[in-house]
Length: 111
Length: 116
Image 1 (cartoon, helix red, strand yellow):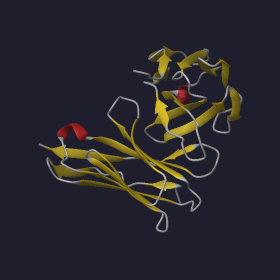
Image 2 (tube, each protein chain N blue to C red; image 1 turned 135 degrees about the vertical axis):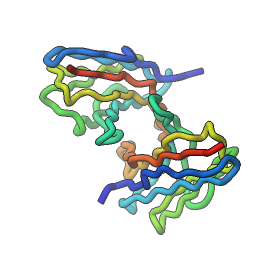
Image 3 (cartoon, chains in turn orange, green; image 1 turned 180 degrees about the vertical axis):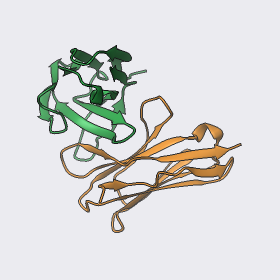
Image 4 (tube, each protein chain N blue to C red; image 1 turned 60 degrees about the vertical axis):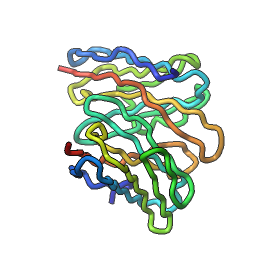
């Protein structure tokens, strides 16, 4: 079992729709959770982080964390073609400060 | 606009040659990470430093890879000798550990290495 699991996609949504990206993690002691966006040929870009159960909103992005279910998600409202990228979920599972990445979900937003 | 810088951006070399990659972390960040990304393995952590001290290099092949941080503004990753299987994109990231859970990491643009 991988430590951080994501569906590889592609997830295809029409422009203006809500894109929902999901991630599960195996270590119940995980403390910090991150979403990175990576365009093809570019480096990962941090877009959201969440440390506590519940929702965290930043503009069109909402991160949701459910530690009991070991589940973290990213919602993108009013999806734009420019949101088309690979979204990487990452977890810090202990005090080591080491990020463990999922393999990423490719999102395609159709105009 | 503070950002992590990396040099070179691209490197093509022959098998057996030494490769050195450099990273300048964001000013004020006390933690530096080296990652490698391939299609097959995804993003893998190779090594990381806090306050210039190496904390974990368990992800690195010890016989050929070495990572150092000679000062707060420079981190290096060396491969000697290089092999074709080392072909990948190598990312440096930096962060500022300000509390138990404050631990965001910011990535540089990467070095795309091709070993022939």
